Amino acid sequence: MALYILLILLALLCASTDVKPVKNRIVVTLPFILLLFSMSAFRDHMGGYDYDMYAAYYGRIVNIVDYFRGLYEPYYRSKTFEEGFVFLSSLIRTIDFTNGPYFFFFMMALVTFGIFIPSLKEYTPYVFIAILFYLYKGYFWHNFTLIRQAVSIAFFVFSIRYVKSKEYWKYILFNLIAFSLHHAAVILIPLCFILNYKLSIKTILIMFSVAFVLCLSGPLLRDICVQIASTFGMGSRFASYISDKGTINPLNFFEIFVILFVALFYRNYYEKKEPYFNIFLNLFIISSLILIAFSSFEIFARFKEFFVVAYMILISYMVGHIERNRNRWVVFAFLSIYVMIGYFRYLVYFREIPYKWLLW
Image (cartoon, rainbow, N blue to C red; front, side, top):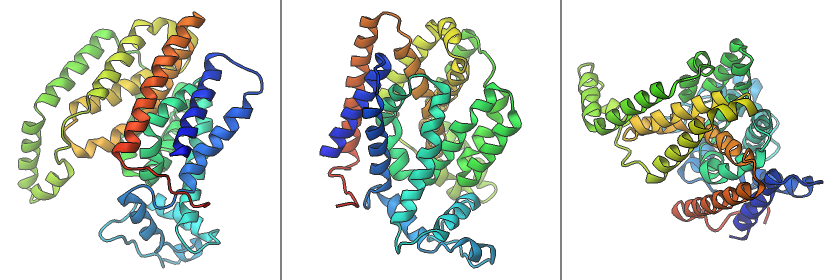
């Protein structure tokens, strides 16, 4: 438990240096980043079923020479992983000097954090406020469980800069890599053509109204889809893909409402301050529409994980750009309390206590 407390305290301290800049803040930010990375890289059998699945999968991976010789046999029960992920795993196996899965998890964390964290600096001057929110919103789920999707998300986050510069071919290239790592990234490829648009408030309200209608008609829509699939002999298989996810967490509705309201109310102000604001607002809207419209469809849960970065960046703008110093600290205090509640709730709910460390 001590490591978890230390991590959140360092996160709060680092984020406070975004609220009020200080000299030599690397004294606290560097230890925080190292701990953030190390807790993912050196965990011991933490991550639930997925940890064991990836460990078994890596046990069958061959080095890159044998991979090109066709000696790799895709296997984990009936699960065949994406070719890009297999290729990356074979590269890791080639330099692996250990006899076990721990080096694999270390390298996956290194690749993920090595791309994801530096990319944030391109989009916000308040990186540590963004990471503070990430501790609650995605850190454990992404970096302890969604191993290959976390790498895919990192490539997506890096690619967003090319939407702003309208170098769409670069955006598509990086997201084809993301797709090769996790096929859910297919949803990202066409987004480059719409993220630069400025949606009117009327259009946004219409889109959310449609999303709520789809949410209410979720069971009926699911039954219709299964019936259509059944005519092709795929009813049971399709039903497993769109199984009932259950009710949406009320906190998600609260976050969507607050972030969307503030973002739209101060839209002109944020657009003048931050060149990427409109792109991340559009990403947030897309994420919210998916979350609301398809909340009862399990298959869509993975799509929304790509858009957690939109929450992070928008939150960082909303806190960092409050002009009055006192108000900025008050809002930061409320954000900190909210994050801590969500952070410890996650640890308890997913039974990640105590932390299991490889180093001792």
